[in-house]
Length: 261
Image (cartoon, rainbow, N blue to C red; front, side, top):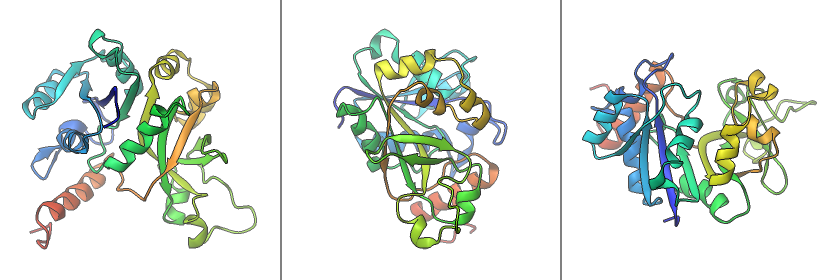
């Protein structure tokens, strides 16, 4: 367990690509429940909180045993929702805060620990994780967020573009597996002060262009450590993602039985 740590799972009901995403059923359970169960089973955090703008989501989350906080419906991001929760009196004693995306039903214990330890150890203001990119298609895909690290493991830049750009020849499989080409995974750990500074900053030009909120603190000089972890299952953003995730869950629950049966 990471001492004095709290995990917050933001769960906004509105979603353009997958309507009512937190409550979308996968193998008979809401997506949010699968995420919460994975985080709870990890045993990493002292407290786990679902932060939502929806009474309906709150009711469902409480029904499967989650601790819930209702938050301002006008927050522009999950980061702002997390910041609202941890400023409440009952959470002010937790210096390590981890934001676990509510659409990651396969989030792994090792990845949660890796991000939290970057911050708990005092070396970084924000910690996150990334995994080697598996293919050229993934490298070129703008929905795959790429990150480039410095020699000490700090984030230099996040982008939807294929970075680093190989000028002379496209990277081959050996290059992609080298740790140079990385896909950012949506787990963030923060020092309390860094999180509150992050949400107080205005939207920056780079964030506006790329539509990546992590560029806001990075541009402002907040140091983000990036640990490299094993390739991970993608999250759920679209109906196709949901179908893939449900099949994967059914394979896990009922091994050997075809998921379409």
